Length: 239
Ligand SMILES: *Cc1c(COP(=O)(O)O)cnc(C)c1O
Image 1 (cartoon, protein in one colour):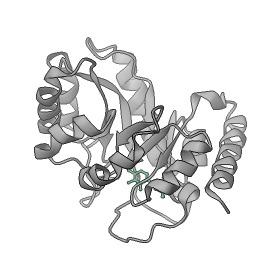
Image 2 (cartoon, rainbow, N blue to C red; image 1 turned 90 degrees about the vertical axis):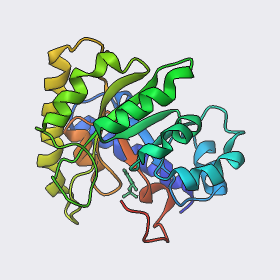
Image 3 (cartoon, rainbow, N blue to C red; image 1 turned 30 degrees about the horizontal axis):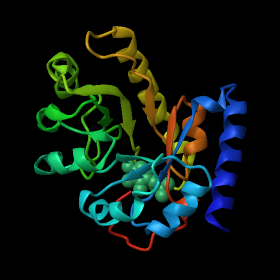
């Protein structure tokens, strides 16, 4: 299967899941996760119409970025853990940070974004399974409350929504309760109408093996790597 065929297949599955859930498929954004993937494969995805890409390492993307400049309509989002000392380089490389996982990182990004013309869009990453090995703020934590309450001071950031990766299971149904909790939190925060948090419109949940469940549970963005680009060779790329 070519990458273009994979993209077409994923789009069909998005359509089918959306119609099962009686949702408008246009409200579900497909992000291609291109970590570990070479620029030639990214080109194939771009030519198949993908415009939103997720990468998880500053260093890897620094190396690939020069080969990707011609894809002028592409948007590049950071979806991996970002060390605070790389906030400055991340801002230069990426259009958005979808993996804001601490108050400290929020402050660093806000300071680093001081001179940019536009606010930096961010998603707060929630560690929905409470897993040691994963980053993200805990769902009912003080840190999440603080992050939301200091948002008015973070004038260079624009909090757009939430992102999460549930614990991995072969059985995608196991992701459903975690996705559901994410949707509830997403609605709860939207309904609070916090000052300085504008439209909270992105709920980024669901990957290759469970994106259909995520769509049924309200995902507005899914992050698909393997189902588009094939199995990743390097085991280092933490999912
Ligand atoms: C790698 C990765 C994905 C994509 O995973 P696949 O199973 O290959 O679709 C999605 N989200 C994050 C945060 C990732 O690191």
